[in-house]
Length: 387
Image 1 (tube, rainbow, N blue to C red):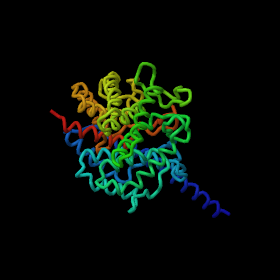
Image 2 (image 1 turned 180 degrees about the vertical axis):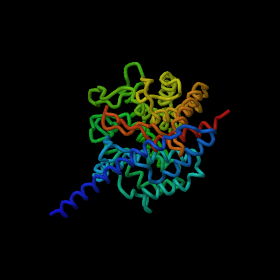
Image 3 (image 1 turned 135 degrees about the vertical axis):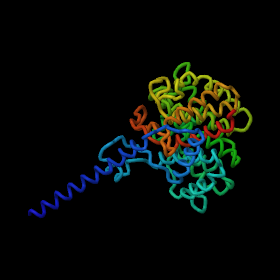
Image 4 (image 1 turned 60 degrees about the vertical axis):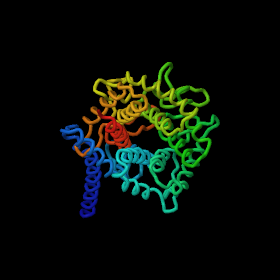
């Protein structure tokens, strides 16, 4: 009896130690890498380190947690509730866009390995995707692939998912809540639709992308502003969620800019150019003195590296399009702020974690491969236009 009790106690303490060790590991990995964060003697060293870190993360990027728990994390890991495949898909897509655009030559092997990680020898997904989040990953694959015909089966599978999410209003729903139109969809899906049409010569998806953006501008903005709400209800047009969420605004300007850049000259491009022109001027007022953008952009006492990285990319593109020096100044200020929040290993830190639900935002602030990719896209344009 005594020996049985002893083994029971031993098992109990061993289990407790394992749970404690897992919690301690994640606690340590969040805090220790921040030692001497942002201390870079040369800007060129910083850029190089950011790029190398992005390359090292591919093809299987670090997990971005969706759980809000900070204790007993082993339970979430065992249940498969620590992260989600679709969250990892848009992390990988954003990062792959960044490393590919920063240096297509140096990232060629990482690009190849990432495609092989997801796509089989027949051009199909190894694990069929089920969410529209995979559209940004498909966009990253297709944008820089020399043989788009090989990828067509996988691209068609993503198109099928998107078409299945089109509601009675002719617009794309993000999730199973098909009466809600999310701002996330603009950045995740719209650029892919335009690129797919350009690549495979269809004649309806670019119009769908532009309509999705225009309708959100019509129904999803706070009155007389370009502050997007998290989502709106399609039948009533009523807002659902909060206005001015930083990364939500990032989804809007990312979808707007990448769709605009992918469109061929014509009526659709002209329609988006008007919105690009207006928003580029509008959002400058929300940039903090130190160059950052907030968790909610109208609240300058908050800060989010993922929002700031997307705004850096947006204003980098705006400078190339319009040549306005104010946009280059905004880019420089954002990059300076992002540099100060980059870990010694090149990982961009203090990115708001994945949202739990509409209006329920993550309390985590950590690395995010997607934001790393957006930073690299901004850095590439900055390098090209320095001086």
